[in-house]
Length: 398
Image 1 (tube, rainbow, N blue to C red):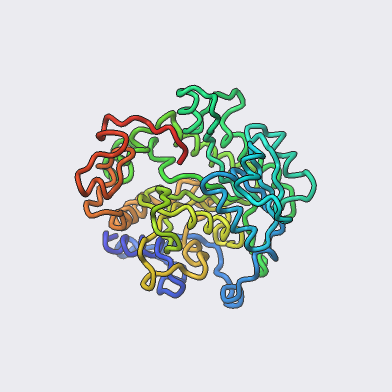
Image 2: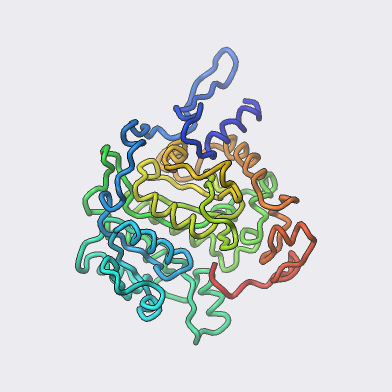
């Protein structure tokens, strides 16, 4: 197959148009006289015209959502978006006082519960207390802001590896959410399609440390970025392990891996989705929160893992689609790929397209030092953590 054709298929995978020549299932032909046809993308049936054109209120499809990490830098936006759409929220937090100051405890739709996300029993108990939840969004990071921690403990907490014999909160609390909801009634859209019960906020790059050296070299633009190159305390491996635990706990799920979270990146931008863990770029946390909430009513996302960036300054030219469903429908189910994503051919073709969407003029993600922006790289300015290869790990959450 030619690289040109693969690149076109990659674009079909990632771009989010509501009407497109790629809206129907895509088949490719390989080989000469013995050509064969195969599907590259998911076999999930398309939404009916009626279902795609009329989106019911969120509160009619989900009654109560547990949000882990509700006071985090992304979680707080998730909570607000749910409340704004009249959905009840169970905020699972470590610090109730902090939550009461950050959220609106007077809102009758909001329940704040102190919960140890590192305790399986406490997480499951939270889901069964009072009114039952029918879905959950995992926006916790494993990061800690406890003032009495040593520098080493803070560093370990920042990267999700706080010393805890029970394991990290990702590895314990996330699958507990899945187990707690696995036996609750199945969630379905008005058309009867299965909706996810647990939505995980993961991170792009989680598989890249385990790539072969040949693949890392071939895809250096995403394998050589600072967080992958340094991988402090093995954070990416922890996230990858947590993803796998969620896939195996028997609950309908979606795993979203956003790229660099950046509050200065323009919000309300068009998202670009891909698979294969090759995306690099930026996305605003408010857009991440919106995507996480939208996934609650997107059957095309159920049972899938995918990455996402956004295109900044796209207003008027590439506005966000009314629904992310058509873009996600083109992506493969984890059950079809073993959770590994599409074939290497498709991955490399998609990579070639996604690298053209990098911020900055140099578009050299592998040339960045940790803590250095694309804009600083363009100006040959040093980042806040030092020169590439000599960086000091940041002591803050991301």
